[in-house]
Image (cartoon, rainbow over all chains, first blue to last red; front, side, top):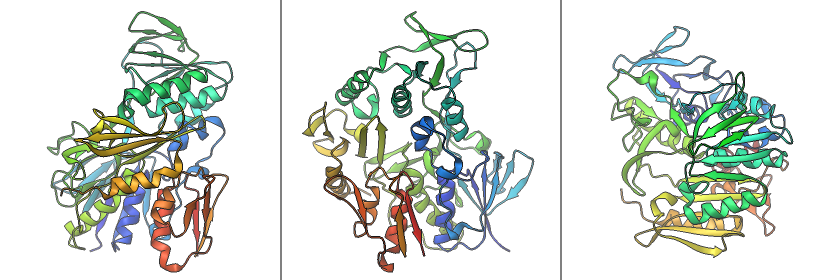
Length: 396
Length: 62
């Protein structure tokens, strides 16, 4: 009988998993199920280009390689439950799908602030529809309140400001992108935003949204009241794992994986992308979720091999899964790039080249060893630092 | 194999350079330059480069 692999999640991780299963020789049926109505598309432009101008799904869609031409896409319907012992998943339309192998690729959704007030005028940025809805409200002169000073918050603030909006950022930290950049570089990033007219109200949270039908402002934890025409909540994300409840899994922070990306050692069940909490022997044995754009591709490559080996269709992975984390962020004309794990070296941060208010390379060290770098500009130096971090031994 | 980079989309991240340095380079002005008809032996590397392009600006034909 033809074997079937179900991929729960039809975004980048699901697509990459399908590609890698085919590349590794799987000839059975692949069904990819996604709650969004779209084929997989690239999300980073959603907080930048897609807010600045009309961007179609076609422009953001990942190319579909010939090897995935026969993947059955079940779009616009979520996976609502799974019975891992019986190897079956149930979809939102009632369909039951039996499967031999399962790829967990359901990703994350934006966290919403659990505070009182009207819902209209409050936005998040995760999907194409989210970006379209926010773009329709971003005009010169509108008051935009961005809650959260991480990647999405900073990028949305920069885009909105560039479009001529008046932008205020409220966040509990003492600097934007405090993790992973650290206090010094975070403060430098704040200065760059402030030079361009963004106001930061840090060390504060939102207590309530104001307004009747639609949000007109917010009341902060210190009692201050701000006017706002548009609110963007960029306060982190929540793993989409509810559908896995009832299987005895630890779902406290995504899906706990072993070193081969198998879900808690269960043969034939793997996880990919930012929902997967996995150990990286490049650093230590602590399982972590990683919400970087490079992770769906890295995890899918490895998880596909693990899964096929579990199904008796191939050899297990040749080596440990030890990806070099990498991320970037574009804000105004600034390009931030990171390689390695800055958060593991935040007690010993040094400027390696340049200066914090110009182009700069910042190094993050653990026990005197470089474990991460962040560059602002300095593009020509990126390869050198990346190579140095890649050369560091992996203690497997 | 033919490689096409949409230079209106490319933002010179240089991720492709890490995957396929024989095909993609960042020049001294920080702009991407590339070999449009690389040898077939480099296909895996070029596929990888296309995958990791943050802007998904790389197309492979043939």
